[in-house]
Image (tube, rainbow, N blue to C red; front, side):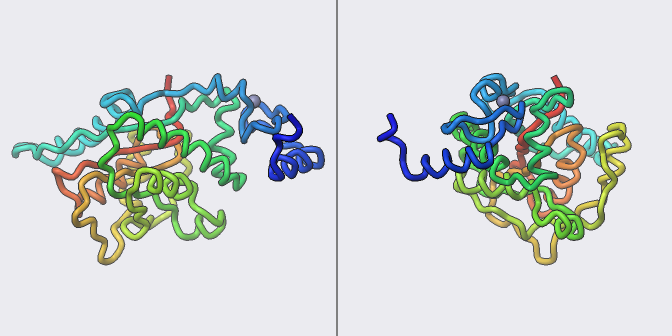
Length: 255
Ligand SMILES: [Zn+2]
């Protein structure tokens, strides 16, 4: 057994003695083969498996927002048919459990490696489902430049980068920008959330998505969908139907 350990394993084992790696969810000490999360917490991860469903609760919530907007605009006129947006999330976000630490540690504690690890898990599911095979552009929800500067990175971009690579799509950071910082959304109602983020995003100068047919919007957490929807609205200006715009996040609040 000992002979089978690689030099990398020896190094990990040595570092584990000096500074034990902990499970991101339960805080237990990880064994040599475990990465970021212990086998028990990984087995209990409340996965949504939304990647395999053309319609699910998240996609219904998102498409409701899209439809609501279309209805208000096309009042009295004819509605333009828009393709149904797919939506995928790796797991259900539950504030009362340790699983919230997955997105928390990526967003606030600089744990980009864990973010990439879980993003890979999600995108592998999306590849297996076949529903996302034609995604040709990945757009992470942008941060306001001042927040990006103080945090040093954009958590949605960390996830988006992994997704673009595995889906074989282009990572597009040159399309959307955040014009203003928005208030923390946690305690706002859905109407207030929509109002809070509306107008927060804009197209960059010379933004183009010419030739793209399926765009994937990426964020860390999906709550009401207000943020991704605000991005959707802006992107639609340069990517009208029949271009498909779908959504993927690590976590989805609900259930
Ligand atoms: Zn654990």
